[in-house]
Length: 100
Image (tube, rainbow, N blue to C red):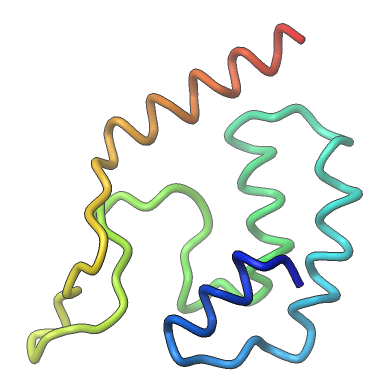
């Protein structure tokens, strides 16, 4: 499992699912087989996430990376992410990748 993925589970105090490493093993060779665009990113995300009932596929629209939630089930942000800037950055990256 990649170090950043291990660190994410450790930070959240969670254990990775049994098949987490297997999904990474499947996603990595698949990464170069399709164009790097929104549907390609979503496809890889589906491979990595597996069950998307609790984690939606695609870019986050809420602009934060939630960990804990308050009594109203609202996320308590640990890291703020300007979602609009992130989307523009990723779309620009995908556009540049299509030129290579």
